[in-house]
Length: 314
Image (cartoon, rainbow, N blue to C red; front, top):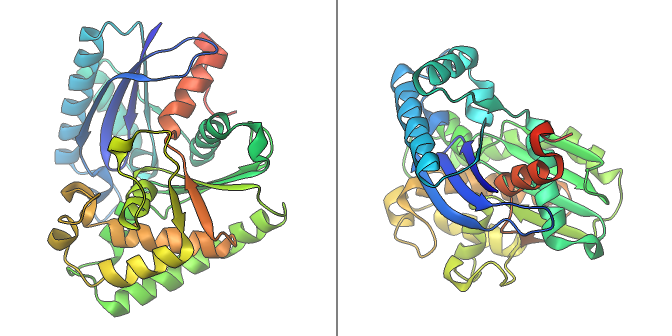
């Protein structure tokens, strides 16, 4: 069955079409995305501005039309942190459904973490033992750990790269004082969850998912995406610290010239790197293995398992 999966994230609206079946590996037949940066289109009250909603409606309609053209038999549409945390989220959902006919399902932060964990487990297999997964999106950070397909612990924090850039940095490059203050803030937010994670003991495999972590790995020397998904890619704590010292002094335009990063994300990669470094330090992780699968694959895998009864991350 051809399945269309629409992910309305904090940075992009992303549609993948896959031929999905039980026991098969979900491989995209078509991949389309449009940058929106919804998390940066919040007003002072935390509501998504009208221009942001209009852009979202247009992108969802385009994705729906593309899905129909690709002859997708099922269409799953979900939204994550930017809409989840917006104070006008219900109004946004109503406007999208009225204009496009698409009913977006908001995933909770815990669902997001659980579905991403499922994707990491299926990719790395049972031999990985206990997996601890870190995923840094535009609006939130998800962390999970477990020995099965359902994690023992899954948490979500509003520590996304785009959100923190929007809230903390008002110069380009960011001021050293603001970087230090943001570091302290991230550490404080991670303190309690990290204590919960440490209670589960040693990690067999530390995994990193998301575009942010793939980009950071690439900037520290990992193979490019053109090398394919089966090439092993890692991100080390020492390499990450060196990278932060380098890119935090650069403008977004200069960062965009680096191999492995695009202009749409160059402005928020410093904040993303700070979150990655702090999370690895808090969880005593020296190296992350980068997983090519993440939330969208988790949604697809759960749908394959549950079919019409798909309910998300539980």
